[in-house]
Amino acid sequence: MHEKYFLMFSKDTYIRRRAELKRLVGNGVVVLFGNNEAPYNYPANGYTPMRQDSTFLYFFGQHRDGLVGVIDIDRDEEWLFGDDIDVDDIVWMGFTPSVADLAAEVGVTRTAPMKALGEMVNGQWSMVNKHFLPPYRHDTKIMIMDLLGLHPSQQKEAASVELIKAVVKMRATKSAEEIAYIDAACDVGYVMHTTAQMLIKPGVTERFVAGQVDGIARSLAQGNSFGTIFSQHGEIMHGSTSDALLEDGSLVLCDAGCELNDYCSDHTRTMPVNGKYTQRQLEIYSIVEECHDYVLSVAKPGVKYQDVHFGVCRLMTERLKELGLMKGDTEEAVRAGAHAMFLPHGLGHMMGMDVHDMEGLGQIYVGFDDETRPNLEQFGTNCLRMGRTLHPGFVMTDEPGIYFIPHLIDLWRKEGHCKEFLNFDLLEQYKDFGGIRIEDDLLITDDGCRFMGTKRIPYHPKEVEEFMAK
Image (cartoon, rainbow, N blue to C red; front, side):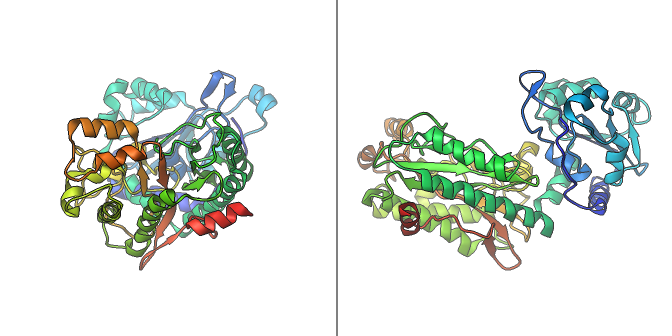
């Protein structure tokens, strides 16, 4: 509850952020809900550490649970609502500054106990437009229902589009300080992934390696930015780690990241369990590697990430045609979505305080702009999370992959879907292959892009084999 955190930015940073938010939203009252502790299996045993809401952190900077920030744009007032802790909390959890002291640290002058929030919403703020973001926690949904009379099923639709767009505009472009924090998180990610590469060998369990990776995230950072994926079933996008033994000749996929100073890393590597890629594995791996590196050469300001995604799809199709797995005209195949047999997700997503940055605000606002919209009707393209025009300061993932999903192969073959572009007879021979993904975090610079972090996790095949041999 009262883990000690320091403000990540200066008081003036939070003051400037709230002032810009007022300018962008224009009028009304903005209500930003902080998070409460979440019980693990009974009230006193909570998930540790408590994770504050990212947007609340961005504008109010405090990690303590049980807080709500309010910005009254029309009156130019800012409030922090919350209850001071009592001696019972101090005995068990240690001292935490008062709400007034927390508010002063971030330049907020008005505070009140939590019960006053309802009184003010139904009093001086009763007739003004109230802006809130789509809630994702059930206790917040209940609080919104109590305050505004909106049933949880109505809240996502009632959330303020003006506020969503303003938050996305501000959080999408990272400051130099934020970029430094993401670089630092990626450096911890380097340790996580190279540790996995050193531990991988036949006979070790998936769970053991994943546990060591998680331990590094908790030792060198605040913890994981998402649940670690470490599995020999790389064809399952979010495959669960199991007690299975790593098998000689198999590939194992590790998708893991950490959260440090409230900012995230997210990398994926795919390794041979015995330290040597087979020729068949290399043939597929080299395609993913080429697609991954293609992004580095074309992603820059003014380019639509949607175009980069489809450039990857065309390149992948061309290379799979060379192996005989695909056929026909490349443009027609990509237009028909045939490549989604192998790449059923988008090229990447935005990154920052959330590993899928701001995804809870609605991907149509986060990943797209007026010039780009995803085709929600086509398999694969419907999972495109990032397509918007790139700007300096954007951070996103570059994560192409090739997957052989037996159930998907069977379904498309049965339906005859994209049969003019796919060699189903040859695909049958790959049902035991698994999947390969290579993922890194990219910063869009003034004239191009760069990897995040100061160290590069090995991913070129020879580098991986040499590193694992050590």
